[in-house]
Length: 434
Image (cartoon, rainbow, N blue to C red):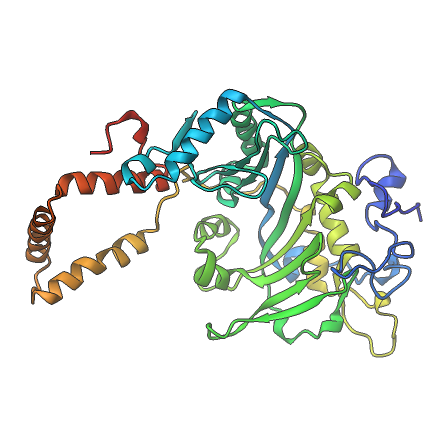
């Protein structure tokens, strides 16, 4: 077998044949130290050998793969913020802190097709924050030479709509308008994933089935849902971690990312099908060891990275009561299919509908949004909706008039304020503030 890279040095998943082979098993377990966060080393000294693989079955026989690729991407841009843009951001940040809704609504910055909200608060070491449905951008100050110009999270929905390459190209064009970008952006974190359907009941698996380099392993339950088991987490808190969880439950009770249904359907998903997600989160230190520094590195090595994660760092095995060496246990057929998913054509579906605005859900608008009106109707003994709507508007105008305020101006201020939050109204033109 070819040499294995030293975990203390940056190792690449690409290069000549020996390096490529080593990519399946870096870093060497015999040389790695145990870490409290479970980043490296496991209970075995040599790592899994090629002989432990079970029979090769077709992927579709064991799972129905629906979607795979990059879910979250965090980039760091080396460079310097221009003095002019720092002054502009400082001014907009102060507007965002104003007690006047009219002034606060003007804390916006339009860059190309993006109408960013400028937040009134910053983050540690990054005092300026811009946000829309595509990007969450944090800028450092001009004098902060030891910090990157910007640290950016690209939204998962934007990645699902345009892909990694197009999203990062658009982002680069935006960041370049704020100062001098000295080099290609570096990846500070990436989440890679696979959404799939299978018949395995992961709740019934024993913890010993997981053969992994990590030390920390947890099984999660949520008692708010009818079937409380939600998944497994491996290496929690480390620079490399894994989550296997029921994505359909997570969408329903937490993220509300129903756009995924549109992406699953071309591969056969139907409403009611249980979808699992296998996800790995990699932070900067691990990415450096694997030779993945920039977006082109990630795009070139994504398949090899997935094989490393699912064949060397983590594996679901079938326990063998006659063999106490767990690394010799056969790989579970479902996991074998998971590890080989990049052998399938990599033509992923894209969202057909996407906008840069952070729009509230229709459920929130048309269910929660009617709360005040229905409360008014009940308090006045009105059952007819049309009558209730008219009386509500009439009473609201009377209420504001009695307080000495202008109802129309109040509505205009509120709309402008929320238009900033939703990235829908450009209040800097002066036409939307009432």
